[in-house]
Length: 251
Length: 299
Image 1 (cartoon, chains in turn blue, brown):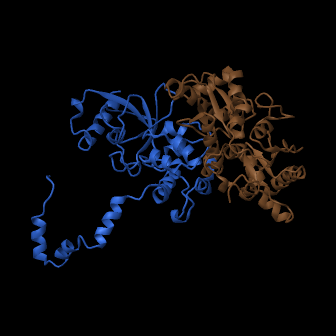
Image 2: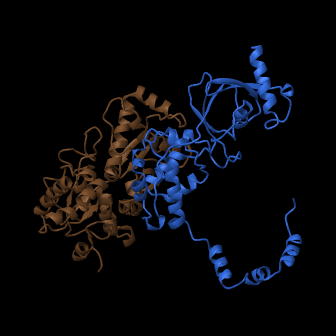
Image 3: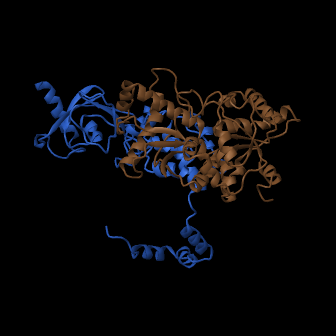
């Protein structure tokens, strides 16, 4: 035990500058997590991502923006004594005592290639590129797996009946982590289907934004040409002056 | 009458004319069909394997929505769920019967769907035909503005509406419910010995020719009895009988096309709702020339 703690302390020492920035002896709350089966004590206020780094791992894959947007740090875990397999984005979830963790750095999934401009705006487009969608048994496992709390099964069902708007709305916050596809017993690749749905909806379903049409007309009529001419005809010195004196947001 | 309504996937896609004509004619009859706020595929086919519970999850999930509508006050004390598609009707009703008769299996299914409230087993799956029958066909004929006089229609039942007898809505051997409705609409009904012979169902995906052969038998027998059109309540039967006429014609150029209606299209026509709700543009064999000939549509 003594020896193990020494190791932990050494790891904490090595990692503190990039994780908590405080001395390990000042940390009051610790939890035990298991990374691929091996136990580590980590500060309780870390995210799964920083806790894995605290334990001494360096991410080569399975880590991206660290802000909850990119969907790269897909994690699955079980907690000690619980039957449920749970999912998370490692950068967005705090460690909990007794977590058995593993990162999923890559999800193998077939992604169809298509030209939305040449497809029919009908439910058949989903069957054409992802025929396995018809195998959905509405078990809702995808929804349970989604770390973004999206209603995944509902948008798959909406796709089956060609409701592109519902697919686009319900899948809008998808970060393409792939957990739905990893868990689906019907082997559906939900997040690629959602992307097809959003692309089709963007092309054919959503209303053309009036403000964009107006702005395009303004550009074509030369509304902004004068300002552009000023810049393109300016000398380097004049440009430097303009840059230095530009209006900018407060830092 | 406000009543929860399950459309099913086909009524939102290839059989959109079935839904349009239904909603328009139900309104005339004072039936307010309220689509489930959220629903999934019915499961399409009722699974017959005793331990194949996963395939009962989809239909049961839809029945929970009816409970929720009652709880949320979207509807008041209405545990019936109306369906139109014969396949959806059959799958939902049989799954419902299955869990009512097998409470242990219902518990397993409820436990599996742990994010949902438990299904209590007290929803009743009904077909629109049953609502019409309860209303009384004489009441329906009162709403007819344009009797379908002289239109010779052969009712076609297929399998899923009347079989098995535990869930069927009419006598599986001698069904009359379509004839009763068509008579109330003023049409001339034509009996055909093939009115309950299988159309080939989803074999249409794998074996077009087999389905075209079956469809040809069904259609030509009706034509031999003098029918000028067919009436059905099933989008899959309708597809096989209507769209497969392309393959029939390719093999047999002598074959004369015959329009296939949903019963609700004929209701909409007889009730005189606006043309836009007939949805004839989705019928493969265009019924417009026949209806113009019968003075039921303006040229």
